[in-house]
Image (cartoon, rainbow, N blue to C red; front, side, top):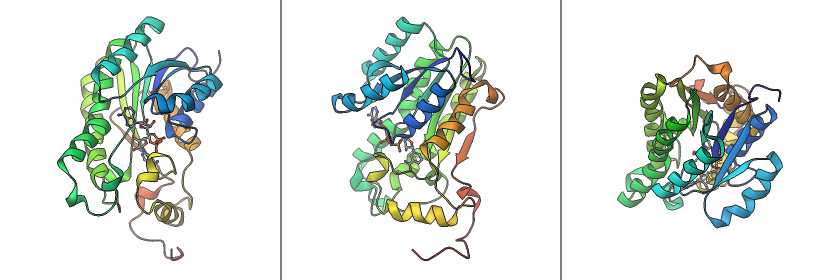
Length: 264
Ligand code: NAD
């Protein structure tokens, strides 16, 4: 086939519905000739993900809950049988108890802290370890992060602490896997109204704030994130690893509320 991703095959984890960032990435990759495998989390999501996979001609690599080791192993065994090797992997997975994405970070419970770190940080390392074995010709791993890792954002709380850990793990994984030609990067996306984002308090306000104050005076779409992800997953970025690439309409460079921003 034609396109930047022609001849490349990879796994996308984190499609929940057609508003998911992972779905924006899946579409951009397929448009450029990639062949995809998708996972879904639990039976409830199967009905959503199956028709989306069909739309892209993607293989369903199974039900995967990243807190269960055997569940991750089963996905990679499926891929090994089907393709023998993979060229890229997208990790678009995070979780925290909704109750704690409001109020104060200091009130985070030990149980939710551990669960948040397990699903939102460790799972990327867990899949990187398995992907390494299948990336026999090198490859590209990508995860999704948010500016709340760098600066305190309202209500992001324990998820901000998790994203800081995720970004640090991108750098450690980049060093561990670099010798095999495997690159590891993250896209730091601006706020987008997805299922996961609906758990964050005052999300509409956060979207408006970004729209008024980002240099591009807008929020980003899943298609824009998808196209930037395409660059990091393709050979165009062969010289890039360990990078946190902001796709946020420039918001992260701004130090102060825009003088002409309306009150919200
Ligand atoms: P989403 O709800 O569409 O995707 C989140 C995914 O995580 C879902 O597919 C869900 O099934 C999966 N997931 C959660 N727990 C899991 C588990 N135990 N096992 C397997 N999968 C699990 O929302 P999204 O906004 O597209 O989120 C994708 C990624 O993008 C997340 O890492 C999120 O933190 C990040 N991100 C989102 C925004 C935003 O504003 N939406 C901004 C920056 C970064």
